[in-house]
Length: 475
Image 1 (tube, rainbow, N blue to C red):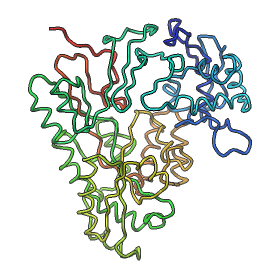
Image 2: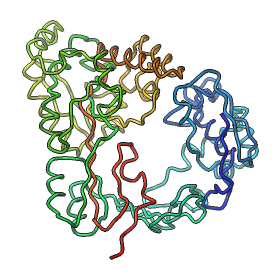
Image 3: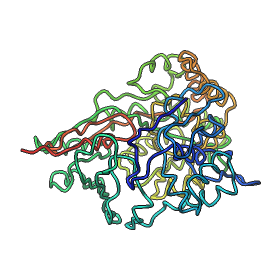
């Protein structure tokens, strides 16, 4: 695949965006680049798909405007695997090497030469709250860049239009992103302290927004984000070695009640989500449901759940259901789960924590987790979550059949084959009761009526997806 970068593409410091930026980005997303004897990759990245599916470096000159990547075998998401890059010229300078030296080291996977670059990549862009670095460290190739002195710790970050941006210029020249307690969003919108809000969609929030009258526009809709319950299968969890308890807990989850009570009042078309990789509003959803979903999961089966709890041999098993503190909808979800599953013999405990994702989940100090994955529309990205060696497989899930099905899906360009493997994966995940889906998140956006071009989207970028088009309408 050959990629051509626009001749007009520049970083906000005036440096051209070149093939070298994407070559270095490839190296940073390649988990085969690691020091001898090291267990972890040299670069710290959330995903290593580029290195996995493109094992050799992109071909191109460091300062050129073209580069070519070669896939040794087909890859289902080839159209979007290459997307953006970070400023490699900044990395080179901070690592004490020339741009050309860095790009060469990336191409050659030279661990020794890349080590100082990786040190900056991993930690050099980690700043203290409120302390923006010199603009030379954080150039942008998008429509906005950081405004000097524009970070107020715990309050806001101010962006300003990037004069070097090669696309359509930002309609609003200065944009302030405020960090505000979700409980204050509606009042702040009413007072004029905020112009656009995207709060968690709750019944109360929607009613408050609708009560603001014609001064505010309200948008609701589908989102590619889905809520689910995940078992901790690691040591110390009540579910680690008990398939009976995993099935019992799945059977007592009041999924329909959760949707009826918490989601439908916000979005009338909401329904229980019965898959993980295909959303109810997407094509082929019903076909995959018919092939993979066990219909007995439609409603709780307390009696069967009781039998399975007894069969497990665990008396009144305690389930620490963890989630990030401060989320009212999840608090209400846990209350509904407790009301149902305690009838089956469980003791469900609300184990919310302000450091759930940062400390509790990595330590495995929970039995089940309530959180959401943001879908992307990609075909093979779920492998990162469900394959045994997936970087985001946080629950120690392992099924060789699932691994094999993901490999088949990821290496096929045949949409029919991809669909069949999706059916296989979903069926296996249900058999293992892995990542039990609840619902697709309802989207909720409120904005001042005089702010034009605010458009809700299902994508995980949220309302900000087209922020460069937002503009205040002059009366």
